Length: 100
Image (cartoon, rainbow, N blue to C red):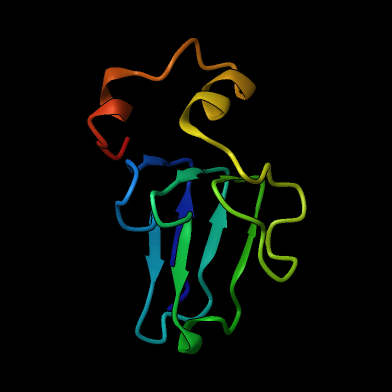
């Protein structure tokens, strides 16, 4: 309850799982200042975990949901995430799908 996901870069390849899963009634979750690009979308949130969910200032690979990401950049790809955020290039760590 009340988890904070902040300042992470998670890039998954095509066909991979979502970059971030919020499950099992994890209410009060805050997602801010992340790059979340998943093969199956940025998020998987089960119905019991929406209570108190908030997020903003993220780069995500799908549409922002239900107003949770008003300032986020949506429909990002790994290349656009790198180009739009002052990252010189997609690092070897991101290419290997390592959480930074």
